[in-house]
Image 1: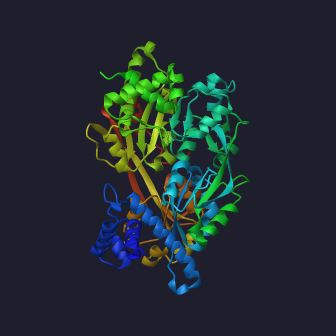
Image 2: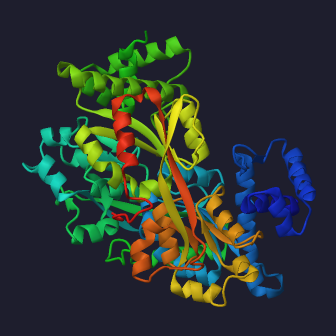
Image 3: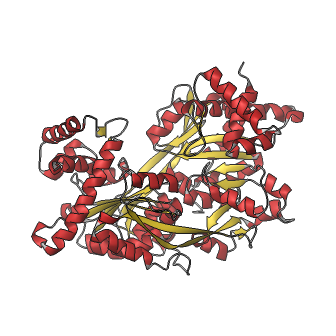
Length: 296
Length: 296
């Protein structure tokens, strides 16, 4: 079996952000921590950490980290029946889409995490990369819009996010005062999350437009709304995120009949243990997407 | 001199997200675009694009893109004096910190971009990586907290963001009801932006605490606030971002006397031309940070 002392040293170095702090956390000297990491690297035949520009795990180190996190999750279930074994907290690494994290995610899982004293390592990824990290064992679960399960994992539907093409009233009047047309779509600056943002292309295709368009690139959910509010462009924004701005009239839809529905699916490893099963139930029972959410 | 037809083809493929769309934009066939990219790659002796999993520039391609963007910026200044040469828009690639983009950035530059019909490619990066991308010619400007200029670039101070350790009143009562102590800081779950987040460590050092602490990792400015609002932890949040929640009492400081001031500096290439000089003036004249901002 794997020597978990070595993996625990690795996990603690990453969690504490340094060898000295990891030593303090585990009650060991800094050189004992270094020795454990070195032993691990010799056994693996490759580095598990890079030191510069900042301390972080290599891809191989990250897989070990995920593994030790999963083992710790399983240990948690065990210590429910054998409390003497108990550890204070568990960690779970999850990939999810930026818009869920910026809107309904925390309200849906907050109580659950507080009750279970579960800590989350959240990573924001596009769906393709999130699922690849899951296949590679780098994350324990992934929230994205693909219904295609990863081999060995389960996939359940969570709900649907509605996106609307929003801009300030001034902007809408200036560029779309005469309605949506090939000319207006060709000239109106859009806001796009990144070069692979499919929402903007889906919206334009729904409008029957397939040409080019000027656009800002803004890889931040909140920044995206701020750019729209500053009159810099129109963009596909989750209705749940922009509801206050829509209600106050600061943002309006440039094409009220053109919404996009994006389904969300929760992918998780079967061997994640009871914690991940209960987190899955918390997510499945959320009413924060599709039906009227709290906003925050 | 470089054959700018080749660079223009590359820039258009990236901007349009595909060879066919780039051909439409430039009035060329798809195979003519492919031929230009191939010619460019042969001259360079290395690829400028990767096709999978998604179309994007290689590091070498990205440097070419940045160069052609800078040339296009310079052309804009020229066409101000010779309007017959005019092109509709310019693009500028900028690296900045997530919290600025999530808060005051758009309100500070929105009017300027609309008036100048300037499009932004924003990339969110930590300060070290943002400055490295600037040194490598990958971005034309970088907003971060380092006052150290990159060789050949200018660096001007923009203002200061104030961070406060915020949580829900329930959370503050539960973990810090008896005040801040070694025990409470050791047990209270924190929210940390990423493994290299220095703000949390600076806050703990100011409190005289140097041990370990449980924490969630949440690499999203808006998600960060949502996790705090869901009672999952306390975290260092920009005062400008949380002002509505502070005023409504939904978030409170767990240590009102412990704020952190983070200065922001704007780094930009000297040869960026008039557009970047005027953008710099717009940024320097913003009152959105330090003094009472609009929020949004």
